Amino acid sequence: MYAKSLHIRDFKCFGKTELELQYPGRTGDGVSETPNVNLILGDNGGGKSSVLRALGIAVLAPVLHESGFVPYRLVRRPRPGQEPVGHALLKIEAIPERSERLPKAPSSRNPELQARIERRSQGSLDRLNSKWSSGSSIRRLFEDDRSPAFFIVGYGATRRVETSEYSESSARKLRGLRYQRIAGLFEDHVALRPLQAWLPRLQGADRRRAVAQINRVLPRNVRFSGRLDKVEDQYLFKFEGVPTPFSALSDGYKAFIGWVGDLVGHLCDVASPGTALADVPGIVLLDEVDLHLHPEWQRNVVPALASGFPKLQFVFTSHSPLVASTVRRENVFVTDVAEDGTATLKQLEERVYGRSAEQLLLSSYFGLQTTRPESFQDKAQELFEKAAEGDSNAALRYLERLTDPTMPPKAATGQRRR
Image 1 (spheres, rainbow, N blue to C red):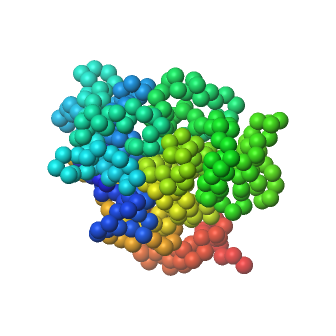
Image 2 (image 1 turned 90 degrees about the horizontal axis):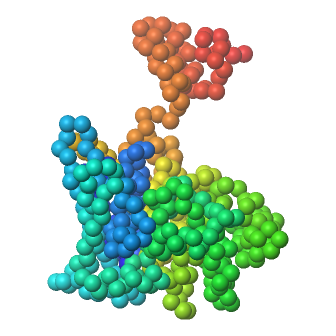
């Protein structure tokens, strides 16, 4: 199942907004060359993470009540002087993947998933209610945690792998399995499932498929061997040809391999016998896709994921212009501020694919006036103003500063370098 559109009203920082999303198999106008990728850009606090949470809640609302989910401050809290808000609404128009057998909605429409969140009169805990356009038949699908129907996983920016103290049985006592898959979007302390928690259960071809799927999206200089070091109880990778346990990898590799391994483990849980993991449909929500990644890897991470998991619909957030330059403008949403101060989303006509980091940072997508340090700009502005008043020495220093920003401070005070 994919999300064709998401409608948000009075959720978190949002007033009213909607997204028409890219998804595998999409046809018609506005289809991107990478139709399984959606990228959300914007300032800190602009609502990027809230979009991921809205999608997760709208899809899984029927089971969140009894899964350990806590609806903490989900209804928008107005600013002083604004009218109070009593509830939030989330609605998804769902697109079934061809292999899924979802119940048909009335009037031959696509199924709709809705969540209504009511604000209580006191405190910060809200109340979640759900509604389905296809009635109880959808509820029966949700009762099977291992069903590939409505498969959705989500990862917050604080994601981490717990290799020593992770207990799968304890995690299941605290949260239902479907909610476990997105809990990291709502709870900072939730650990990802380490490879040791699921890979040993696989045998033969299933195990080889899982190892191969992880390797499909890794950079060429690191390979997953699939072998367990029994002394250290860690799986081994080959980094630059050298056998390396997971904990000895850099933070960037551990962060990336951690969530990809978790994702592949969940795909193994729901995949039908004989089904290739790359053919399982669903939704992946990932906050800060560029987390801990070197700029070289940022240039390749989204295309690698899009091609490695072609049947998954990705919704990423990022602050990286290098990530943004790897997709088309149809894939990109930018957070904005409405007249009433609430957050909203927009898509721009400006080209994004293939532009340099400098070009994108100075474009409407990031909105910077300059990429130079603020202290540098302040000094340059001071020299410019003096030059405008007729100070020829200041004019010369101003030009020197712009053409050679590496010059030492003494040169900026009028002493020329020799």
